[in-house]
Length: 87
Image (cartoon, rainbow, N blue to C red; front, side):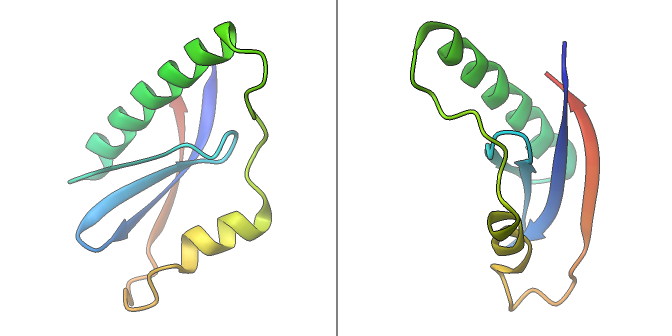
């Protein structure tokens, strides 16, 4: 089981989790739910990677991270969390 770096932020009433290693995103009503959904998405992604030849597995770019952190400019909280998640 590997661990992944995840950035969490609240946006439009939901918690959004972004995996930095592969760009997979999930959302939920709270941080735990968004992380749980992200773990499921990562596990599904890894299964696809095992069976498909051409799957992009690159980490997100700094520009993509910047967009993720600033996309909701109306949200004034600017509260983020960085977590380690296992999948």
